[in-house]
Image (tube, rainbow, N blue to C red; front, side, top):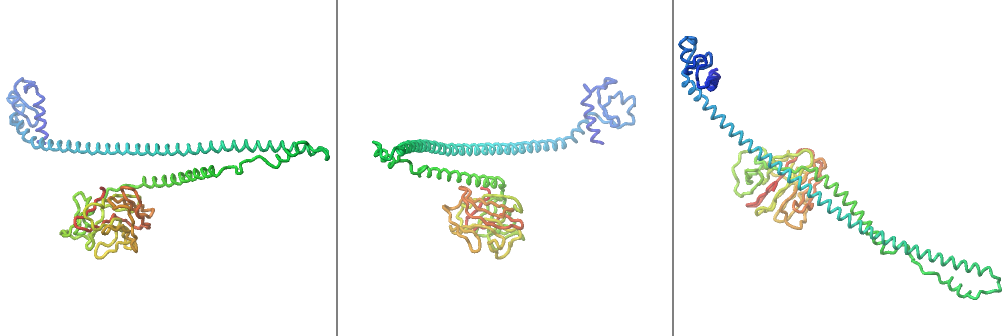
Length: 403
C-alpha cells in the first residue's frame, strides 16, 4: 500500500502543472496520504484535511525516490541482462540461419554437380550408342544391297538355264559354256550377317548399360541409407573415464597420461582399462560420428561401441561376446576385435575414422572419413542400448570426437 501511495504521490505531483492548487492557485506544499494527492496551505487551513496524514511534498518526493532507487537499479540490471540475452540469442539464431544457408548451398551445388556429371555420362554413352546404331544401319544397307544383287543375279541365271533347258535335246546354245561357268561361280557375299567387330561393340555397350543400371541401384540405395543417418555430436562422459584419461573442458578430447589423476569413485568408471564412454546412448535408428585418431604419439587406440550394461571394473574382454564391438590400432597394426582378431590392411595410416551404427539393421561400420573407403563391418542383433566406446594408450596420445 505504501509503495502504491508513493507511486501515486509522485505521479500526481508530476501531473500538476507548475505545482499549483487548482482550487486556490497556491503552491502544492503538502501531500495527503488519505486523498493521495498534493494540497496547498489554504486547503490545510480550512481544515478539510484536518484528520488526514500530511507530508511535505519535497520530503515525500525524496522518500519515494529513495525507495525507487533500488528498484531502478534492479530493473536496469534486468534490462541489461535481457538485452544481452537477446543479443546472444539473435547471434546464435543468425548463426544457425547462416549454417542452414550454407548447407542449402552445399546440397544444391552437390546435386547440380551430380546432375552435370550424369548428363555428361549420358551424352557420352548415347553418342556411342548412336554411332554404333549408324554403323549397324550402314552395314545392314550394304548387306541387303549385296544380297539383293545376288538374288537378282541368281534369278537371271535360273531364267537363262530354264530357257536353255526348253531347247530340243540336239541343239546346244552357242554360249552354253559361259552360262555353265556363271552358274558354277556364284557372286561372293558376306559370310556372316553381323561382323565380329560390331558384335564386340554391341556387347561392350550392353555391358556399360548393365554397369550403369547396377551402379545406379547401388548408388540410390547407398545414398538413401546415408541420408537416413543422423550425424551425432558426441561428448565424452568423465564419470566413465579411467584415471589415466584426462577429458578436455568441452568433453570432446581425451588425453592419456602415465601419471593417474585422483578422481571420485563412480560405479560407471573403468578402473583396469584405459577406457571412456560417450554420454550419448543409442537403442534405435541410424547414427554416425567421427573420431580423430591420428593426433599425438599414439601407441594404441580402440574405437567402437559398448553395451550399456557392460563391465566397467576388473578385466574386460574387448570382443562382441563381452558386449564390445570395436577396431583397434596397436603399434601401427590395425585389426578388428573379433574372436580371433581380424587383421585389417589399410593403404595409409588412419587420421579420421567414421563410425556408422544401424541399430535395427544390425550393423556397425567403420570407414576412412577422409576417403570414404570401407574398413570393416560388424553384423550383430543389438538387444540393448549401446554407447560409443574408446580405449587409448601412449604418453601424450589423444582422441577427439567430432573433429
